[in-house]
Image (cartoon, rainbow, N blue to C red; front, side, top):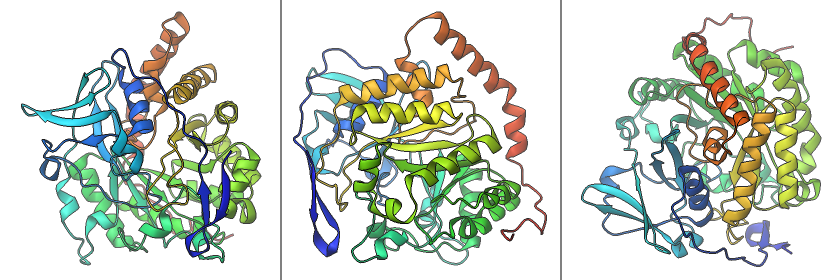
Length: 435
């Protein structure tokens, strides 16, 4: 079992459990299986690669979960985007190696010399530009897959308690203000969002924030209103929840399309141990109530519960997926990543076999609860195994074919709706966060 002790700077040091090894692959994996294994094992970079000129640069922003190399695994159902760990210690021992041969990037599984052709998304031109205020655009927002992620406020307040109450897997307090601007200017955000939309085809802008002393929706409102009215995009929010549900109503009025709630661990003991700030100042039930409320308000498949797989017992992760899909939301499941500098930096990455169980279950839970997957246009999230990616794990039977047919029809019928939702929205001056 893992233990928690006192670490550097008053933060808790996490002693990892015993590492378990899994057997080598004996046959090629499909794109989702390869995605899962790359999240679990990471990847080494061969000297033959020319990533300085071919790839998006690797930067540690926000919680650090996007600090890997962006790749795309082509496939017959869909192309799968993955932010592969490449700098962490466990990645240096990986059986996977990225190489460049005759102009083609390959992920090579050296256990059986299985080779997977992959694409490397190039760095967008706007990354190297500055806003009219002189702020480097990549320090305002970054592409993570095909969406634009923007951490809108100062570093998470959990880091400023003594001792710190930060989530033990998180590195936000080490990154915000160093690798990205601490407090984003609204004008900078508008310019970056417009560049990402016009040059990178971004359809979804995702704002997130750490703990802001129960002012999280108030802090987010000016950014949502500016992007929605002056740029035009689908807008999502990932904030610490509040039981002041009227604030969610106001955020919907000014154009919020999606709410995401990161409660990470379904097991209440793991929630308390690894998320001390959320346990002490927010409470797990607040996450549940806020997710249930916003999901009812916006409709099935519009909100998400975000959890981490590979730390708490497997059965608790499966319960989380059942709970989230049961209330009409979709599960955003991150495979645990021991990010550099986090208290859990030396915690082992999870086993592939366990994660395969998780994501097969995720597909079935989405199907049974008729959760829309891969319906919204051009939203590929590289930090997680998306519900749509798990179609590669589905059994071949009439029920999965029927589900796929329904989602395909929904995707086509929703195209005019999402085109309309991405237009700049006229927002009344009265739509402000006051009660």
